[in-house]
Amino acid sequence: MSSRIPLLTVAVSFFLLAGVLVWIATQERGRPSPEPRATAQASDAPGTSDERPAGSAPDEPASTTSAGPTADDGSQPFTPPPRDALPDDEFGAMVRKGEQVFTNTQEHAGQFVGNDLQCANCHLDAGRLADSAPLWAAWGEYPAFRGKNKHVNDFAERIQGCFRYSMNGTPPPRGHDVLLALQAYSYWLASGAPVGESLPGRGYPELDEPEQSPSYARGQDVFESHCALCHGDDGQGQRAADGEIAFPPLWGLRSYNWGAGMHRVNTAAAFIKANMPLGATTLSDQQAWDVARFINSHERPQDPRFTGSVEETAERFHGQYSTYGQTVDGRRLGANAPPAGTAPASPSP
Amino acid sequence: MHGFTHWLLTAAMIATGSAAAAQPSGQTIANEGLGSDAAPCTSCHGADGGGNPAAGFPRLAGIGAPYLADQLDAFASGARDNAVMKPIAQALSDDQRRAVAEYYSGLPVPEQDSTDTDDIPAAGVELAEHGRWSDGLPACVQCHGPAGVGVGERFPPLAGQSATYIENQLRAWRNGKRPGGPMGLMAGVAAKLEEADLAPVARYFAAQSPTTDEADDHE
Image 1 (tube, chains in turn red, blue):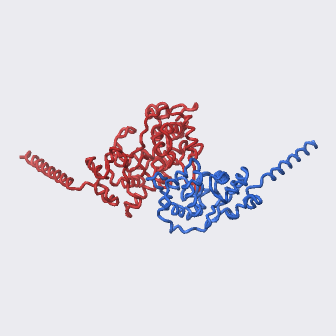
Image 2 (cartoon, rainbow over the protein chains, first blue to last red):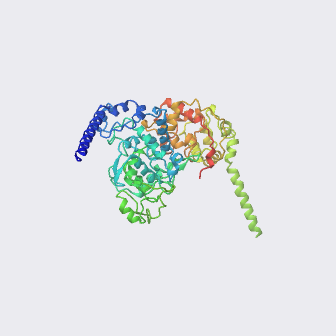
Image 3 (spheres, rainbow over the protein chains, first blue to last red):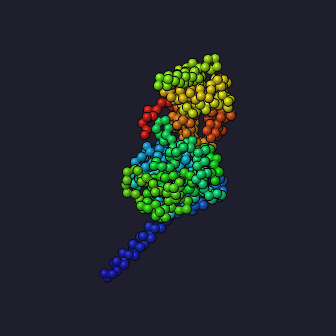
């Protein structure tokens, strides 16, 4: 008798639970897929903000986004919504804040930045431009496992990584407005983009291995003829007449640190080939490799993962495309690096 | 000892005397011209170098010396096609062009009555501040600084510059009547512009204040 009541309870609970699960499943099936709606109206985005389809079939949204083929030939990159499509509500205000942080990072997120760079320096057209690591392509690729920190990162942690390395700063903590605003901006730019797919135009187009091994000397020639006009003979960038940073420094104390993706010669070469000189992208693949090699053969802030030894840090964190730890002009890169992260310190992820 | 002092004085007098004779200062050229060969710059560009916006004569005050010198060279060679400026630039020696460029570069930017920014066409704002990346066209302000205040000596200020002048120059680049500038950047930009883009973007920059409060604030 005493054992019959618990058994009954278990049985009833089981049926109740099963019922709930069946109900949830029907609800899910009945709900229209968010993608076709989102492609039609960018201003729908706020209403669908929590409806990211976790398990949606990737082929379905791709076939509805545009008339021609997209994924196969890569000729039609996704188009983010126009600036004036931003809704005039609280969500729109957060997106706008994200755009401001992105394009004027010093002014709107200065406490997290330890150099003179803006997000938009490496993500042109305020994160909209295909082949310039556009935000609309990045948004749908997270959560993802990253070899860099060997665990699954959500989008927020990915942005924190940008602050830690590329911005040589201190990442905004989870829940901070700056992080939220950047997520809102990315999410909005991706309105209607398929999720969980590698979109044409994502990242920087990878270059083939160069015919000749990248050369510092040839890179210096390229730099002087094609880069110095804007970035200065000393690579330290230029400020506008009102004091704002106009052209970013490419090395030294106020540039990205030895842990940033851009310090790798292949990444920098891919960015440069696709995007530099600004609006006049004329460099050959070889020139891009050479000048990337030259730029990344200068000292810059230390890798935040520095173990105390350049050799050990190079061994643990730096691969074949890194110049960290190599000797250039008799000086070992990384050995004279100023400390990483001049922004106020806080616990990093 | 006496002989040496005499020699030194004579040498000094010859040196200063010959320098003065050969080299009218940039300021002199600007205000007085070179006799009948070159009219004073001020007659068109204003006593303070502020230009004459309505007539389309540009402001020269506070603009980078290397840029100004390049323009005089281009007027003289004819690469920059301008019937008024060509004989004037040709009348100036190489050194005189540099002297007058230095002079104007050092002049303070004249205060300008705040212009009406309300009637700037939206197309002008969009192009100036965001560019048109679908055509590979960066925002103007990316090289010319926020609101076109100028960057360094090679990216001249556009803020407060004559709208007529800006529009004419963009058209000149489109028509190959002006050298493309360093790395041919402006020729490349102008090739991506449509005729309908010119007036709105010129209007945008003409309406911006040429003087900046923060100019001396940065480190």
